[in-house]
Length: 219
Image 1 (cartoon, rainbow, N blue to C red):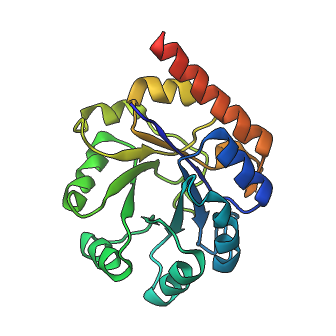
Image 2: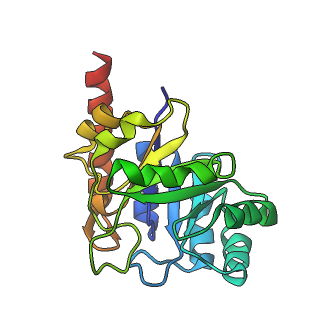
Image 3: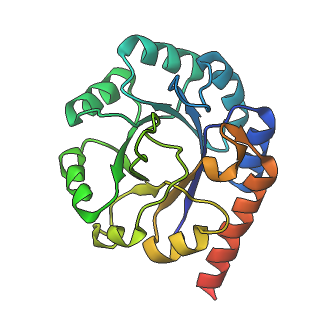
């Protein structure tokens, strides 16, 4: 099975180069002002040029209004929208139609019951992302460096297209792949030397750990 790998929260040429060199299928840019990974749409548009023909560029937003989304789409030219807020199924469908782009809906989970919130979005969102619920006091819906119990994903339909996110890093990605066997993975804080500061060496290390884990499973 092909494993999609998304490096999210990119802000520098060096981090972009490391993500593409490692074989990222998706690169993400965060347009949420409270995040240390926030990037200006025009700068994201410049950076994403390096991914053309190599990886899909994803615009990550949190309950963004139409005016801001218009600017993001015009300046960045994303291949996909990632909706990380409280967007309803109707809002997801509206944005897909407005921008003629696929949408990935993020759901924050901590227990199996949280997966019930998935149902209204099936057939609307093109893909899903399961991220850990943010810790108390955090103003960030994602990128908090915390994981959830991956066992709860075992009950998902085998054909569901999703990415696993939340607290992934080189040390635990092998366990995540073994326990959840997700179609895709998303990493952000796990390849940073400080909040919002992507470390090319950690990105390379993460890809090595993914390859090692997959080689172990194949053997």
